[in-house]
Amino acid sequence: MFVSVLYVIIGLVLLVVGGEFLVRSSVALSFRLKLSRMVIGLTVVSFATSAPELLVSVQAAMDGLSDISLGNVIGSNIANIGLVLGITAIIGPLAIDKDFYKFNWPVMVLLSLALYVLLDNDGVITQLEGLGLLLSLFVYLFVLIRRARKFSDTMVEEVDDALQKTSNFKIVIWLLIGAGALYFGSELLVNGAEAIALKMEISEGVIAVTLIAVGTSVPELAASVIAALKQEKAISLGNLIGSNIFNIASVLGITSLIQPIAVKDETLMSVNIYWMLGFAIILLPLAFIPKKMILGRPKGFLIFVAYCIFIALVFMK
Image 1 (tube, one colour):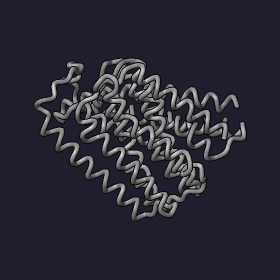
Image 2 (image 1 turned 90 degrees about the horizontal axis):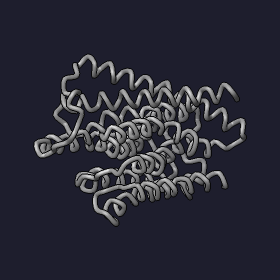
Image 3 (image 1 turned 135 degrees about the vertical axis):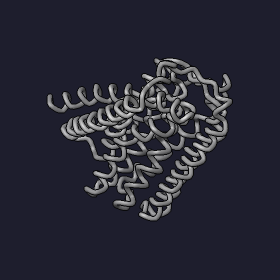
């Protein structure tokens, strides 16, 4: 038990370090590519912070544990909004730009609904459906970058000007350190959390939706909290929405190409997926009510409390 707890602590430290280097390299990279920080958050940061979900899901699917693959992604998408966005908004109010509700939010909701339809149809994500999810990600990224380049002249954002002078070599090194720390940190965290859960005799489905999902969402939490503390607010929001899009389109897309994913735990479809859809959809009314385009502390607290209720219900069942 002591070794498992140690794994969790070391894992958390590595994930925080990884988040720090990832944010630094992302902001520096946005200057090089003449892209907004929101786009960097939706691409580079999101892909790196979705890597733990991908590794866990592929490994689980190959071991015949598709409940862990699905539970991990559904649980992570819930945690990204309920836990990560909630805590980030509590730290400091988040400003929301028009791109959020005109483009990024609709894509996240459409993919969430697509996942529900695919699973509700026959309880399996086939290789063909996985390919469709993966192709939708490439289309999304293509449109995203085109839109960013089109509106780049009108986007005036406060960033750390010192990062404009960062060399390409430094950016690559920071990215590698960030990605490496996130990878090893998530591995240790997931292994430690799983060992603790098994000793406590908790089911696979509960482990996937709670401990593994939270464990693989820690990179998002680390990256978003650090970005919020540094006032890099665009990365915080972009990172989370982008991560949810990546989790469905790339993680489940790639995993189902390797091995079709089947629903085994009925709770995933009867309860958990509705929580995922609810958290995704609620972001739009929260963006406008009562104060427009601001996700303040009360809203952050509300989302976080809802997440705590979700976790409590999972363990009670």
